[in-house]
Length: 433
Picture 1 (cartoon, rainbow, N blue to C red):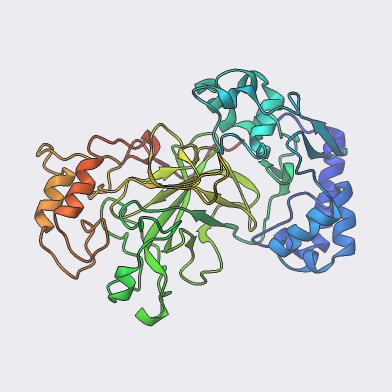
Picture 2: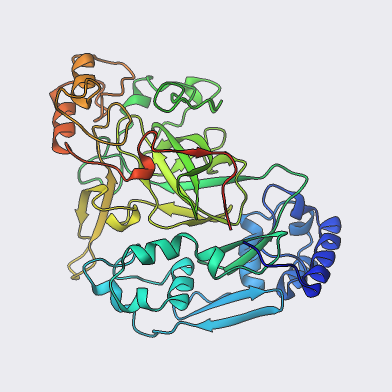
């Protein structure tokens, strides 16, 4: 709960409202990450008025990072508050966090090349999660880190933690319906090409079987979005399949903020059907906010991001780099272990969603009870050829024993509670901070 607004904050709000009247980007779908009254933000908007008159795009963010340098050093991050910006030292530098060497390390690359901003804020706030084993208490604290650490006590700003910007406090847009674009990278176990170093097959697209409109209108997804291509020829030649994206509240992951559908490309990039250079659009979500990202496929177990992701036009999330990319234990399959050179310890790993969830319930069951088990769904469609069929989980255009074998290899796998259906999903106003 926000604290009572002080006289100083009231003055800040007055300046904020005045700034918003003269800076159109604060009322766009993608507003700047700080109010214009913040020291460096004000000088930046004066220097680059284009980013004031339009939306605060990726181009503007890159300019901002050059104009207002924030450290990429894992030991220092710049944190901005209404009183100004300052660098905070990492308590345990220059050595990486000891918890990365434990049996249950923090999420992210291990060993870490750099400590993500959200994790940094947590380690600074609670050093025990860095010194000791990463546990459920650390995960719980991470869920609300933007609320605990980045709270500027201003009800007209949205508090978040970014790997590039440290704490951010975005003015709430009031005249434009906000949205977020999610650029996720994810691989499907069934479509992955062995030894390809990060590619999936495009058999459905080559055979002309990919539908022009998103296919998740049926149960269990019942998604009513209108994402589509104008014609079959407009579908990118490197398209693999349609997928869904959900954004969940960082403090209560059972709360659905919004959802959208997009097209998965052969290199693992998930993009908008309307423009494959852009991310999947989630209406109603506010940019520069931390959200959990969930990705869903027609025949693979859904994944949820390991941490709340700072979502803006410049941010993406890579599920594929390691097992720690997804929340939970053993949620992905190792698809390839690639050694690019004789140098030791430089292997590249590719992970992906587990194949065989034919009924989309977040679990893989291959017995005959319940009657909706994945095995029975497969048996109903067995021997189907050249059709857009969810039980063709290896995307070879046929429903055969090969699909069943992929399913049976993952039998008993259970997705985390937040991706199961329905699991008490909350739709509506999320608690936020």
